[in-house]
Length: 106
Image (cartoon, rainbow, N blue to C red; front, side, top):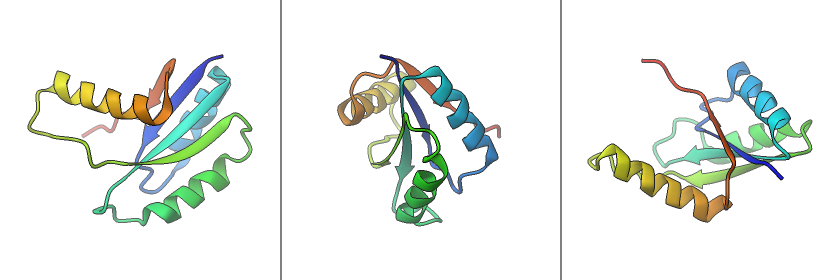
C-alpha cells in the first residue's frame, strides 16, 4: 500500500492545488492532504478545511486533515528544522511513502 502526503496552507485552494491533489491521488493507494493552519492565517482554517473536503470528495482515496503549524522554529538550521517537521508529520500521519507539494516561487 502506497501512502502519499500533500502539504499546503491552501490560502485559498486553487486550480494548481487541485491538479496536484489529482496527480498525487493517482500515484497512491491512500493520499493525505494536510492543511497547515496557524492563528495568523488570513482565511479561517475551519472554512478552508470544509472547502478542501468538499472539493476532494470525488477522490475516494483522499483524506483531508488539518495540522497546526506551531512547531516551526525559523532560527534553527535547515537540517534540524526538517527533522522537527518530519517528526511532527510522522507522529500525526504515520509512515509516508511519497511527498507532494507546490513550491512557491518568490
